Image 1 (spheres, rainbow, N blue to C red):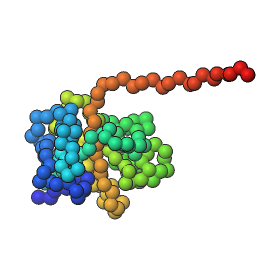
Image 2 (spheres, rainbow, N blue to C red):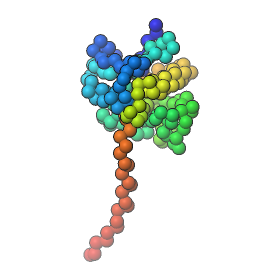
Image 3 (tube, one colour):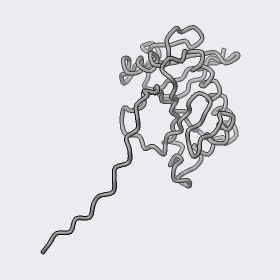
Image 4 (cartoon, rainbow, N blue to C red):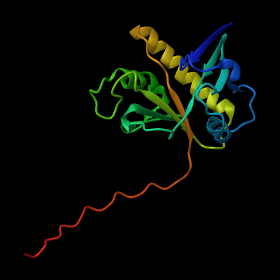
Length: 182
């Protein structure tokens, strides 16, 4: 059986990592995401594993928000939507993901380079592992197609974050001009 890793970090000890099987897990998306925080170490990671036909896929996700990440390097996917530009349906994933990885700074709100490109998966906290598997299956299949087409070494870096239902802060008002009397 073929095993594919998405994020080929050589410093991760697979033997010391925690595997979450999306085909069998009872954890919801929030619990899976919180496992990333609880089990985050330099050589131990959470590995999200699922079957895609005869291929066992292992995604080594990160928790979004740990460290500085430029927003333009992030392509956000939520269930059936790609949240960039004016939003796209997930059916446009190949075109948008390819643009995200191959942009090289041309479009200001897409990734600066393939090495900085990452994909953020946000989801409702109560969604289950099977629903996450659907998103990851679409993402990894599309990524594999793009990688074959461009014949280059690009890496799929996936981050998880659940929707916290927090209101966005309004844009601050423009500063007042204060004239000082002389």
